Image: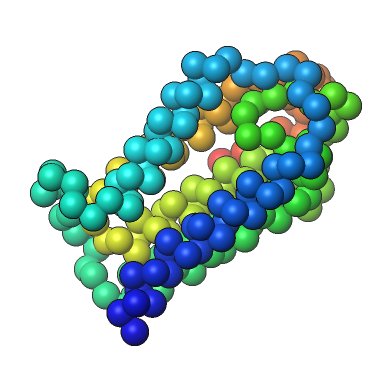
Length: 190
């Protein structure tokens, strides 16, 4: 049974990344793309978060201090949050369809999607990813998980701000009304 605990998170994240890669093949052509420096910085932060979660022997003992008790409750709570977050982001990705992009972009024939998960939050992919990284952090029970979550959160909040600016410029009053009606990340709250 030990193998289950060791392989669960790598398998879930690998399956998610494989789906994400395959789904990226069918998107609209890009009309406007964020600066390369922004994309690189975000990639570095994500890679640092992944390294914190995956590398077994980083020579910084503080990273392995527990912020939660290690055990079944932490593992299964974290697993449930991770799976729920990833499934929510997949739902959002599928609902967004050909308008999706990895970077902040404006697509040719870009549409404002406000149904499905986008009726709950304006950035459901980010909500799902944050939930999944939080779940993984809870399951690790170690500070390295919280630091990884913080890196991803900072990266996605920066991306969210830029995306909000572009959506307001692209869709004007329609986006302004949508943003007054629907929270950015947490339904009815944030």
